[in-house]
Picture (tube, rainbow over the protein chains, first blue to last red):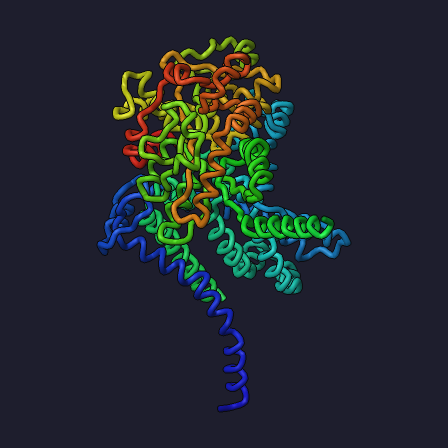
Length: 283
Length: 349
């Protein structure tokens, strides 16, 4: 065995405790949940002993359940899109600026991550309420004559989730854009590229890894988020996470709740794998 | 003599020390949280700890969450020793074998409770009577020219669109809304299809899960009316908020809150002693005075009769409770999963 191989084995040994913890803390609960989904519901809080796919069949054949999955993904796509559009210019600026305000700006970007989800959402509720600041401002500016429903609905969840996850998108993009050599852009401009062409054909393709990374993080956190849909959706918005919670906490149907959780996890994993492959192919 | 005194003092301190050692018990009590837990601690818990040396550790949550924890802990250590539930989830917990029957020799106050508060199977009794009705901001209603609500169906008034709140299905009060609407439409607990169609047409601002949150929305002027309970509504009225709490003509709903010992507790006797304290007239009166839920101990009848201002805020007697509609708990439990499903599909959107 060469010296490097031996070194690699030793590093591998060091990773063992973490792998063991991960297996215990994540692997076992997921395995037990998956097992629950493969048996019948036998009364409140009871999983039966008949091995069956009936929970999955129920999920796949009922438009209502499929609709929840669609809504969850719709939320994910809307939030990712808004984060990309809002985040890209900020990230580009942060990556290229030499301003002494850069540190302050960076802090402002990260600020939402320093506050817990519950507190952040509690802050949004009075701002977005019927008699809240945003509605007051919209009416004072004459943009609307009656209050708009900004919270306790899908829009409220989008606003809260975008606010929470925008930092991830900006940080991912900033890191990648910083690595794009500014001379490449200068070269493109020197060769006669318009600013738009420079952006679409040079900067954007080169920042693809950041976009994919940001998309992965923002999308997967959005589709699995629970607190914000529960708090800003007014218990009107059903996404997979709130539905799973309802099935397990209130209906006490562990088998079906586990099924929905497994479906969500499987789709999230599939999307992550697809995006990673896409990004590898791109680079 | 001096030596004798010293010996006696030594013996006394030894006895005190051993009793204190033997009584180093902490009871974990699952309660509703917020102001309610505070008042239970103030008028029950602290008195109990002073008298017995037993400590109380409060675990706050909705009855539905407590039930979920009990069910999830089946076959393992009990998550708490005592649990405050509502009549409907008490029945589910008892069915799952999670509750102990009480010993009337320890819970001596059981003998003083109204018959309606007794549990027929010997589980924990109702520790208070309360009710569900309609709470509305009388000032805003007058300004907007909205008539005082007389029926559950009056919440569908066009001017109330996105100005009223319904309880979420995760809240026990949602079952009262479903049954109330069904009865207003000629149905009942076992015939709720029309009610779900009607509820599906309602346009509430949101579905609340927390009374404290609803209270904040009443205060902010976002919510003008809600299906709510008497205790929290009177809490706001007593603070001078222009709220009114009324029973619709179909009848307000009479409700029971229960207290039980959890199967598998290491301290069943101490837990029963605590329940006895909660049923004590002193504790019950303190509780009723702080948040107006009705005592179930009949020894308080003459006291409440002497204070009609207080007694009007809750069902103060079995007669008052009988004027209200008491939903059939079995029907509620039999239909609960179906109701959640219909709620998801028709109401929540």
